[in-house]
Every structure is written in C-alpha cells, then in structure tokens.
Amino acid sequence: MKVTKLSITISTLMALSPTVWAAPTVNSTSYDQSANTVTIIGSGFGAGPKVELYDDFEASTARVGEDIPLSASPIGSWTSANQYYRADYTATARSGKFGFRAWSHEKGQPQPLTKKFPATQEVFLSYWVKLNGDYFPGDNVPGPRQFPTDSSWKFTWLMETDGGRENPNLCLPTHVGNGRFMLAGNSHNLSTNITNSWWSWNNWMRITVWLKANESDPLQPGKVLFQALSKEKGLFEVTSKESIFNNNNVFPKQYKQLNIPGWIRSVKDPNTEIVYDDVYLAVGSNAAARVEIGNAPNYKDVTHLELQMHSSWTSGEIKFNLNKGTFSSLNGLYVFVTDKDGNVSKGIPLGDAASPPVAPVLKVANQ
Image (cartoon, helix red, strand yellow):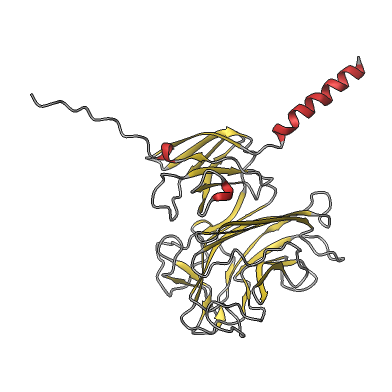
C-alpha cells in the first residue's frame, strides 16, 4: 500500500507541474471609469513587486531648466543629486511635458541622480532614453549618427556602494566603443551579447534589465534579461544564465545603489541632448512581476509598452490605475501580466473593458 500511495503522489505532482510553471493567465478585465481603475481577473499572478522608485518627472512645480526635486512622481524618491551639476528639467519628454536632462552643455558635465535601496540580489530596472540630436557621446565621434571609437556612455550604473573593482557594479548598458554595447562594469562583465541592432537614432527607447542571482549560490548562474523597445525597431530581447556578481573574496554579494546616468565622457554637439524619462526600479524576490499594456496581442510583437502601477495584487486579481502613457487611444491595446519568474501572459484586449460599447439609440420614423 505504501508503494501504491507513493506512485500516486508522484503521478499527481507530474500532472501538476506544467500548471505550476505555466505563464499567468488573464481571463478578463474590467474598467471603473470614475476611479480610472482596471481590475484583472485570472490565475498564476503570484505576488506583486516591491517598487522602490517610479519617476515620470511631471511634478506640479516642474519648469524647464529648474532642478529636478528628489521626490519622485508618482512613487518613491531619489536619494541624492550631484550638488555641483544638478539634474534639470527639459521640454523634451517621452510622456507628459518634461524629461530629465542628463548632460549639461553649459558645464560640460553629466547630471546624475542617485537612488539607494535595501541590499538585494535581484533588480528590475526600466527606463526610457533618447539621444535628441545626431551626435553620440564621446571624444572621438567621426560624424553625425556614427558611434565613436572610445568608451563614452554608461547609461545607468548599478553598484554595491561605489564603482570600484572589488564591490560588484554593472552598467546597464555601457557603450565601450565602435558601437559595442555591453552589460559590464569595473568589477566584471556579463557575457550577454546585446549587439547594437536595437539602437534607434530617431526614437525614444525603453531599456529593461532584470538581474536575478542564483538563490542557492550567488556565484552560480542566475538570470539575466535585457530588452530594448522602440517604435522603429520593435522589441529586442536577449537572455542568459550567468552569475550577476564578480567572483572574488568580497562578501556579501549585493547591490544597493543606482546612478542615472552612470557616466558620460562628453557631448561635442551643442544641439544634442541626452534625455531620460519614466524611470522604474523594483528590487527583491518579485522584482520582475509587473503589468503592462501594449499594442499587439503577442508580447514579442509590441512596439510600445506602458508599465502600470498596481494598487493591489493577489494570485488571482490585480488592480491598477490606468496609465495611458503616450497611447492616444485604448483601442487595439492588450494587457500583459508578468510573474516573478519572468513568464508573460497572453495579451487580452483592453479596449472592450476601458471603452464599453455605447447603447443603441432608438430612432422613430417621421409620421
């Protein structure tokens, strides 16, 4: 009897395993127009992320040229800004009216913002960036719309506490010369090959990076995801399994700080701006979990995504305040739920929920 019982248990577990590892399922969406709230009903959502920061740079006091405050809108705050080269607002915006100008031509310096967060071995970062002009940063730029030969731009810089060679640090990504982009820092390089086929000279680009350490041993292979999204190039994605930390005798292995931008060598053209917008950071065991709306039923086919900030999250129901971002209409849009393991649901139309059909009007023929 014991053997029979054991075989039944194993069979049951094997039958359940595809469901356990399946992507989340979205069954329906509903929209409360008065509250601007969307409710998603489904299964396999797991738990929601711990969002440390989301800044769309749309503070009510924002003015072009004025310093960006440390308080982020709508979630969290920055820890500090460079006191000599203060980050300021620009009218070049991805969403809303303002963006974050990351390079000062007046001072010839980058203008970084810094976010410190609780020590973690998992980070999910998303931000929009645009080179508003024709000259890539760098001292050795051959001409317009060409990459320089020198290492010139650390888009963002994730680190333990500093950019040294002992504590782990990674730039997400960094341009190392001649159009080569890498996920690399002063401590180590990741082998993930991100090429430059995603780069757009014409459009805003959403850069997304997910780093998740091996839960048993942070020096063993973990998960790495790099995405770049633009209207011009669509969705570019690469993944790898490798350690997100350097292998030395410095412990614990952890990240605690993000700088945006990480570093910029120079911008020779006075008419070229480097601008960031809509910066999102989540950390911890559910960092990759998120809700997005996109413009295609299959996630891999989207050319536009907008992150949504949830107000409640359970395994079978998620509520979020609808963020249209730069979508002009909700027709033809789809809802996607990603769980903590990076599994993405199939898209379900948002339009029917957000824009219910108008009741027919009764017309009476003239007597």
